[in-house]
Length: 591
Image 1 (cartoon, rainbow, N blue to C red):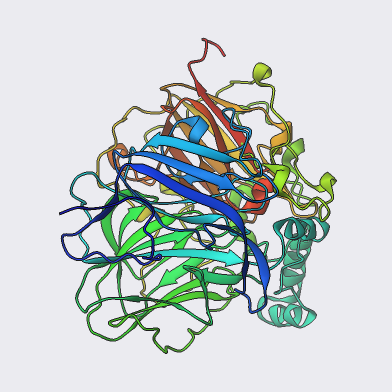
Image 2 (image 1 turned 120 degrees about the vertical axis):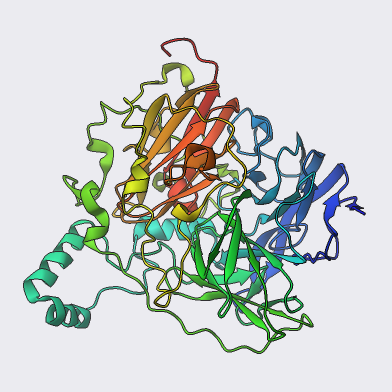
């Protein structure tokens, strides 16, 4: 028997348990969301947050594949807002990005109604796409049950929503980064560290490397732009960990969602294997690992099978080793009194991480605007944010990419639709390189298996097996000195959209010319990773993490007409220009 719910699952919270053979789904109908202000105390003191239905995270929305949903979103803030349905296939005007497809955002006091059919299943999430509201609490989990039998067998499931919180307003965080890019770097180089490295590596080698880092205005410890967050698991800080239930020998499905603004998490359950069964909502052939890194905005579904009644500790450690989001699973659901995990050493970047992409660059500010891109298409992608909800008193407006924050409408009349000649199609560039490596390292114990993109293999065959017709290079760069982030040397406000002909098959090759990880997100469509699998088994994702100095290629079928945001999902990178607009349309020949 399938149980239907008339709205979002009231009273059940974020941990949804399913008995064997029982699934939960919602009836086709209407859902009501209200975005407003609330008071929180995640960090120990009181702070103001934006919230959905009074909660941070917002309520779990649970749909069923094939359902026609109607979602009324009411804005009680005194600034505009929006909701983007991350990873969902839907009409462009329902995607929820202000300034795209004629969507104006949701003005104060108004209600906007989203209507669209559910065309997929899996684990996703929703969040604001206006100013810094995603950082400030407007986000929540979204689960879609398959219409037929779920290929993932589980006796119980829990949604695990990870996020980062700061009591500072997002506008202030951005202003701090613009004024001093290492404002939040609490692991700065020291004189004592220099002499320690010199004794190990030699004085001249250490001096040369420090000088090279200085030219780039960066440090090897620049793992994350923003540190000092309080990390949350299902809205619970480390001091009061989230708690869920299990029974020994059950197959427990954990739907892991990284809804952070800036934080990557390394996830593990000590003493237990994690069987990865889904990535970004798309089923993959099961692969057993000990740990996995979850980039910002990624989702992974894993199965864990407790082999006794002893409580399990869910550990999500920030990549910069600045803290944890923690949870427990026990047989009675009560919080287990488990010791705090030992913090792993903070990783550091190395000059070798830049590889060949580092050659010939002006390291002084890493500004690629002066590079000769005449042989590459000017299709560069962009994301927009609604600027209306910023605290204008806190921001120097000269610091922002105003178009990236939703200020202006672009002129599409002069789009450059150039294309790159195709490289050797038979050898995916990512499959034969170091580009699958995680940088910095997870630091797992010797012999432990850590998930790599190379491990992912689609469970269901892909439909479009055509080779790409052309290649588009997407160069990721920026300057830490000015905290400006770019695609192909241009910030959003200076760039033209990328145009894709409806139905065409294209390859996007990301080339990361910076020392930061970039989780790249294209709205409206999935991409297929060129990860060494045959084309029919290439995994589909909506987030592609591109490591420092790495390249990664993906294939895409442009089968969703409209204007689509394309951006780095690190909030302050996106707000500083690392975004583009992708237009999918039937284009005249030669356009």
